[in-house]
Length: 220
Image 1 (spheres, rainbow, N blue to C red):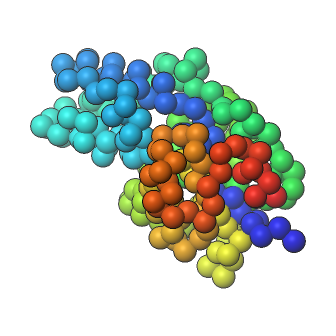
Image 2: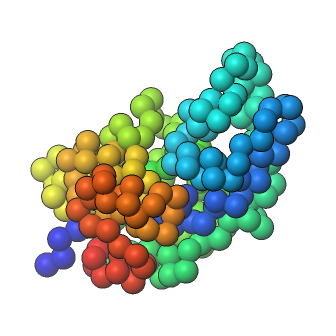
């Protein structure tokens, strides 16, 4: 019998290659408000955090709350306009989630972006039919690495605390791994996303994989 019945995915950097979209949209938003433009390396480093946090770390801290809200809105507008052309599913991501659903697994996406945007992106990439629940930053009060997103997903899926040994969290960022650990579930780090293999190893995930084929085999 397979060990994992419930598979929880991060979205950006795990299922979807959205780094270029995030970089371009962020730089356009910062330029629009005459802020110093963050480098691509800076932006990718903070991927996985909600923009409410990452944008302040990248230089928008002096803004008033009203100005900051306008900056976030500008980013979201640029991101929506760019997403159809600059976001793609990682190779074999679609095959992975499809195989998991066909095997009877329950699946969820837990992401730092807004739920409606994540659902739209997942639908565009063909992933959404194989995902049971999407939990975005607007559905939680505490962001990653706090485990609230995991608990919200498990509640929506009908998974109880007595079934945590059958749940695994998969992500490309240290915050994903720490979130899973805080929820007392197994974790798997993937090396094709935002954070380096060295940083991920230091977070001590239960598993670390380099290819989607490995991930599929682990979860089936």
